[in-house]
Image (cartoon, rainbow, N blue to C red; front, top):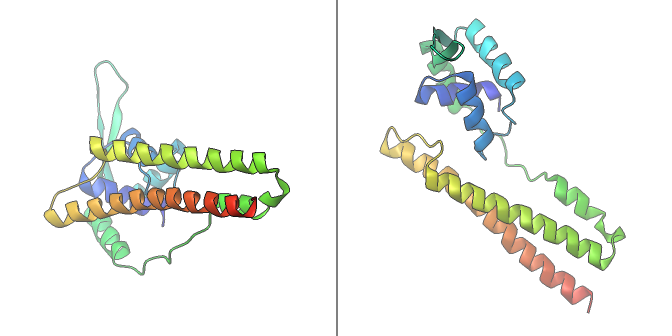
Length: 180
């Protein structure tokens, strides 16, 4: 998925600045980009040049002027075409699984520490996303259907972390059987 379609999608909800886009991307678990300035501003320039966005400069009294970006009709059409395109197949590539593939070189204590650190990270991410849902970070709900879509996206993310926790428990039990 191109970051440009994520930008078009976010801007289809409401017009905003590049800074606002960055904040949404950084806080969201569903966008696979860091949301750094280079990615966002480069994409905004490309989308403007392609006629998929428009912008206006808003002058502020005590701050520098800022650009507010809006999706154009052509941008809405491009977003619709992309939203209707073939989905990417699900992928299960995780660096942690590659790390585990060679973890037999670790002592029992080191392996337990590795599992514990991963478990803490999973728990932290789960709590973070639960809090983001509670605060209703970014979840457009212009229609009942869109609300259901975002609810299901959030449920998928929560289920991912809950499944990881269950997998860790199963993993610990299997390792305990092997080390008896």
